[in-house]
Length: 472
Image (cartoon, rainbow, N blue to C red; front, side, top):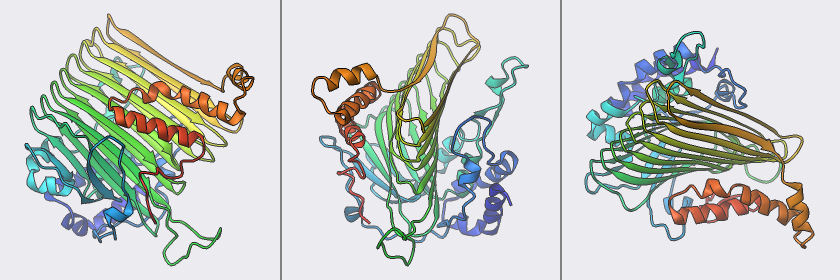
């Protein structure tokens, strides 16, 4: 039986349990999601990426459909703080919201389930509208078919089918949130587990906010085992995460996602962003440690003079696999987008980057640029890159490009002749390589903290962020 059929049958058998532990406004989307999942499936997309969603979902995962409470003590589990950056901290354990609340000046930051119970009209207006219409269908024989023909992503449909809770940030018209918000998502289980995490970010006209999302995982022995040596088994964990982001007219959003997962975690993530007139976003995806990760980012610029800055970074070694797929669509004139992704791949790790920019007919005076740079440090690594640019408008400034190479040996020689040890010279060159990606962060304390974490990662010292002390 295929994975999608297995989960559809699970939903049909447990529908009353799933609905009872969620909210009616969320339940209203499940039947459509089941139909979409049955239609599009979870088959591997026709590209050369590494992480196969169907294979990732073939494991017999447990799901916490009855919403059994996960034993947690936030003060004991983790303290995640960026020096000199005071944040409102919120927590997800697996997919369940467990604490932290912001309600001032009409702002809601907290449980998706609770938000759906209190504001079903906003759920109806925003929830699942982007996730169901983002994956393009291409037909080079038909004019502009890539602009209008789409199919939803199977993983997003599965998330909609099973998600019962999650996190919402809602900022009403004209409200500016000065204090950054931080969402800490922790995968924690002693059994093989799948968590359907759902995030919804809504900024109405003139609103402003910053959100830092930190993904972590605890490495616990399987149920009943004691951690005594190499024979201990650890559970597999699948994080199926969907994030929908709406940025209203003249609104400003900074959204940064940091991943620190272990080798037992597979992450299938998708971020969907819609921007209106005069809006401005900075979005960053930073994978410091990972198991198998597949990240997608879709951005639609639908109002004139909208601007987006998209940054991505991946550091992978051992046998880790990280894919990044991005798609920026310019629907209207006078919008700008700047995209920069960099990867450092070591040992036998694999990575890929597929980046696409679409300038639709009539989107004149578009200014869109995409850059992808990659370092492949050994002959056993595999880094695949495919930049794409599709233009149907006149009077535009657009560029795209990619490189895959190794460390500059002349620079290495120069540093070695001046007494710098080889390991230190390698670290300095890799750190400098990542510099402009980190500099794209618009929150200075977070920028400084990420520089520190990247340096520790290249030195082989980052097994856990020291200020994100996840205890077993």
